Image 1 (tube, rainbow, N blue to C red):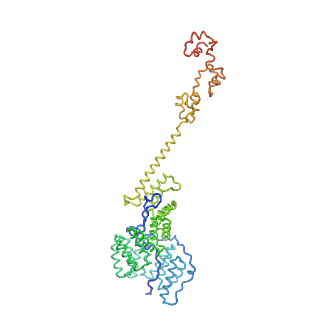
Image 2 (cartoon, rainbow, N blue to C red):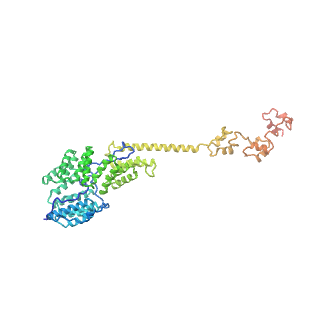
Image 3 (tube, rainbow, N blue to C red):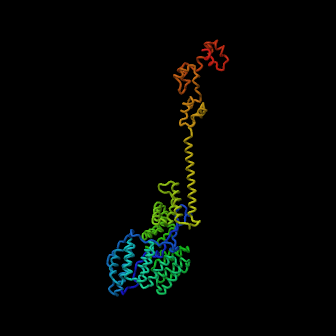
Length: 556
């Protein structure tokens, strides 16, 4: 059997907690500035809060981490000191390669690790570290190949097994993960290190008491097994035994201070206790050990959201997404940070990204509803915007399911949206009615006395677009002279009137000018002459109510 060196430096794979079978979820909410007391801030829920939860996503192959520009000293090959044993010199080279990888100098680190891959004593560690670098570069398939090489070199080596199990669990292939663990148990002759990885599968099943029972057996065989410490702590956490979980985690840290997952788990416990200062301390410590830890970045970002430090929160969420591009909760929280900076269109895009990644995930629909309810969006009127908010709230309810609590804020927001939409519709209807009434309102005559024949005007012209012209056309006069022009029979020389004056603006004046006088000039006697046939007038018309008309009828 090959002789291998133990306690060789290895890279920490971001998101180790994902192997627990849970994910960081963001309680739905917005940190908008319009009504700070009405919107709950996003919270990162503790992993393993529910055995039904899925693991946090692994980095997508399409995402490649930008490589840091190597410093001048990094360009030189790693040269181990000449003194010391072969094992010591190999360990030195491995530690230097890992350190360069941690600082982002992946290319230089890969060259050295590929050389170390040919050394039996450290080949398993070199293969695993190459897999971690491939994972960070978005080459998931290549990473899995390197993990397989590491397991072939050392069937008892837990980190590559845990990384592979996490990958299959993230993709929902739990049965594949179980088969792999069973195979490694057989290949390693039930090594405690492999049994420790198996505990993560039991934890993901929600069999917490079984985790505790099996974990104790692992610790009897291997008191320093950190996977047993961690999974037992998480089992107690999910059973509500927070103090016991805290004790086990702190005991684990006393054995190995370089495990960021332990600090992250402690931060969750203190968040549950609302001890945010201590939680922040542990999250910052986790990121000191592994700056690419996505869950720690997300939860520290949430604390910055709560303190309204939106710019810092944005950077943390982007860091989490950079290492885990499919981390839907971090996308939702990024949307909240952008909304807090009034970058509403960018916030909408972040929510949509989370929605596209997981159409059944409720949080982005809820946050989009709040966004459309509270803020103006490009190209949408207020009514359309609020209607869209209602649609998002309805989608949120559908995805949340029957367990939506009665006190959930979505109930208040939906009622508010419905009331606002009703007011808008009523105002629109009222404005439309007023406009219709305005179009029917007649133009009134400018004269003070109205129309001489008001009855004719009311019958024919009150709704006409040009009432004065209508009055002139249908009622026999202008709309401004205040009098009636008389009937055609009012003029003695009717033929002259009809030929020259009918339809003129001032028919009476026209008759006087063209027909030789007013209606009674030719018939009514003057002071000197009376009527032409005075005798006839005296006999028949002297006492008539209209003597002139009588004279025309009987004496002419």
